[in-house]
Image 1 (cartoon, rainbow, N blue to C red):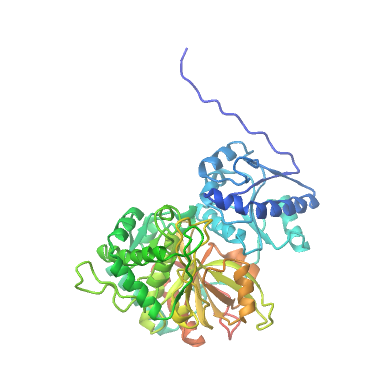
Image 2 (image 1 turned 180 degrees about the horizontal axis):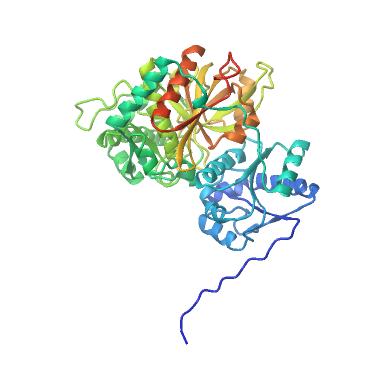
Length: 555
């Protein structure tokens, strides 16, 4: 008789026919989970009532933790423990009212056999819809089937009809008839030839993306598998945030002071105080200026065409936030930095494209955008934003639905009304950044933009691309939107052409969206078509979303 010890596997209890389980993925930081929990609890109460009205019972699959003072899944370890006790065939709702780390729940969702529904409240405050879009993009990349819903109050007839349909059928589809595959679009000869030529150059000469520690904030969707990235002519230089910290400490106070003086001479205002825990201090600014110099020198050492700094985890315990660094790097007009021996200016006369939160999809997009816009004589500055929230303009200045594109500070001053003089720097919220640090804040100027997003689906790179305008809103409406989101961050008021709120939410595969200006509507249309040709020639499957301003179709 054998003495082998076989594992004991306990099967979790099965749910009833009219029961639906709920899980909530949260932040990794205790302070964020505690502060955001009331918003999550409020959402779950409303969602429980909506499920009940549809004839089902919503049951939490994990308990509120009194010691932690919240009920979120706060780590991958906890997520694995929760899923070990879940009926693998149960209908499952992932309810998100806050930003969440997708990797906390992704391992369990990948192997879950029952129907999955991701749900977010329509609020910009914490925000759940951004967390849900990140999870949706991660599930898409992982090949997991899921449905998705969002609502302002969970009481509308439309929401409850769709919720009931999912509970009865286990799946739900939204209309995405605003999407046109590139194969159905005729690209003018010159734009097609330019895109193809730029792709051929990148594939032949290749480029390096400097990645300061991969996988920021659990964003599985933001990591491009090496083989897919290599097929575009781009390669990762995997860099360590510890190296960035070390190099930052080597930069002299004199060099840091010169960076700040240059910025202030351009008219930017630093909103400072003396209390380190809650205010932006001179010491924090000095460290950010040192980090700016350090980032350029490391990028030059490794021949990087673009870099991404992880932004929160890791560095937040050692240095102030990297926002001021990121937005400055993304700008053509920025403080000059010399090599260590002082013999040359690094990346003279050009930005060093930075992809916020080490979002490699945004990094590839940003590099493509930079090279294309440079070749076409268009503004080269580009950045990602969070697809943060949206609302109708309550000032009635414009009749369109206006998106709030918002990011922590990587937006370049060239995008702002007034440029550097229209920019300010405010302390990042202490909940996320104990070491402080200032943002690069401004209001994006009116104009025509091209938006895009590269993502991974079916084990290949894809790109959605469309047109939009940035509109000017009265100060009181801008402030309303800032106060409903994060007032320290740069904001863009965007109107997407031919893409409604619900179409964008149904289709978009990321919490991020890439934007760049063109100098006229006609130029923006040409840029979009040439960029589509560029991406297509790199092997990326391209889809045009919505319309340009003048027409009903891109065909």
